[in-house]
Length: 391
Image (cartoon, rainbow, N blue to C red; front, top):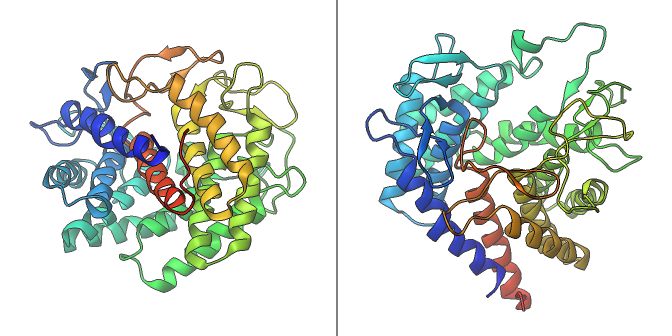
């Protein structure tokens, strides 16, 4: 069986049915994301960025895979819930609400807004809904208005150490492509240029080839917990966003630079003793402040599979295929749960399941289905050219 078939089959026959059957709140709208091993709801609070991510997932699949009416109906449940219950008086999105939609926690960053903009744009493309399209644009420009202070009052730096975070340019580089067809061409070009410069010139360290999570505004590094912090999954995920931009711009140099960075991060962050990719690292090898630094997380490995597939697709460099097989074998043998469906999210360093949930406050219907779709698409193209298969 070839790779494309593995990912397509898992997406359509395992991952999507798990969420279709267990997560949709048919009474209140939106989705339950706190699902145990078998899919039973264990907590009913709703986390807005996961509501938006799931609405995006089903809208995107409707647009790109099949005009499945069940999928767009599931997406509508999330879109309607976001519109009715998840926006505060200033037009910003909450972090969490009750199952009925009563506010619980104000957002402490703008990422609820980012995923809401993604969801609204894909749903508007799918349905032609003008009101949702307008909300997508309004949300996008609200994000840009907060670009210099993405965490607002919750983490406003003093002038003593003005570190800037990688998260926002990273997510904008993907968001702007998701909103193509909604945004005008000048705005798309402007945001692409900003994101590529920030990611590849400011946060990518020329000496080590690694992506730093926080840097000084000129790209210099600060010798502190945050200044030394690496998040390998973030860096690798951003590189497949850069490859997508490189493909869009027909910029092979950007594709090659992004691909080279994937290898640099992987070689630095792979756990040679137990396998898998570390969650957080300190660039000087000092103790990280994150106690979960050595855990192995689902999204880190899935984003790596997507990045390696794209790197191989657009460079045909066999180094990426070798790494792909290594990461594929580790990921599928440790995270996938064919008995109950979907994937586990959290392993300890040794690769044992640490939490047996399938969804929660941070894990929802997003990274797994998106990776299944992306890998399916990449390997379908690769296999059509080279007849690549597993054996």
